[in-house]
Length: 330
Image 1 (cartoon, rainbow, N blue to C red):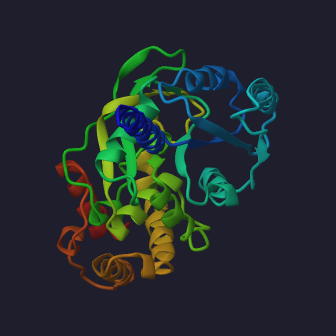
Image 2 (image 1 turned 30 degrees about the vertical axis):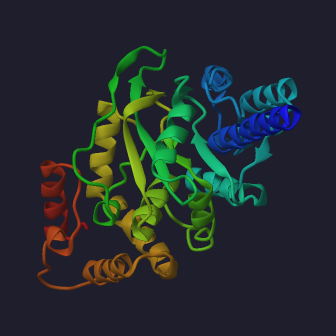
């Protein structure tokens, strides 16, 4: 009898050990890091080293280069050779801009049903970046679709910290996403459900201006959880090569984009793409998309953007939105 009890105890202990291991595996997913590069050789090495320093060590790096003329590809090739267990040899991008480049990696068949994180070539990830994202998404229920983003610490070209990115006080939502992107692409992490949702929209998203803005639009339009973490996870380097940065020069550039019609064209491209994925949106989001589409082409006096349910993350942003609409630049 004693032997039977001992055997049962051993069986119970072993069962607990197996269950604990399985739970641990469920809580420590493999993250597929998607990095797009173009002439990033001057800043790439610190970013690659910061991936190796991640507390969450279970990741694979997929890089794609869009025709660099510096040593970017050779650096990526060397990094892949040094870490063949988790770094894929660099791929070749489509050559149609950053949004199409990132979405081409997301479209790869290997990404189906996978956790995905987006990475820029010139940042430095803080060690907790991936681990915190997985933990935060797990609290939202990682078995379903959910999206994570975070604030960043801005640095100068040499890496000296300048300060944190803004903290957005207003609620995240589709009415905000239609006129503003607040999710930083270099911080995004997607659960498998979110990855598959985004992948299902890629045919319609061929001409969207920004991949991270598209993630925000699809996530809020489909009604899935979106986390915008107040804790910074990335050192975001500010330099002249940034597509959209945070400094004074970039702010003036963004003001020009608002005035010269580029911003309105971005919104039109997003709305056209959203109209093509109406089946993935909530009924409310699909209806708002078509309302805004009609409003954009309406002649004569129009109601304010706010009356439609559109808003930006600050009172000043709302004022700018109203002004642009009144001047027919939105």
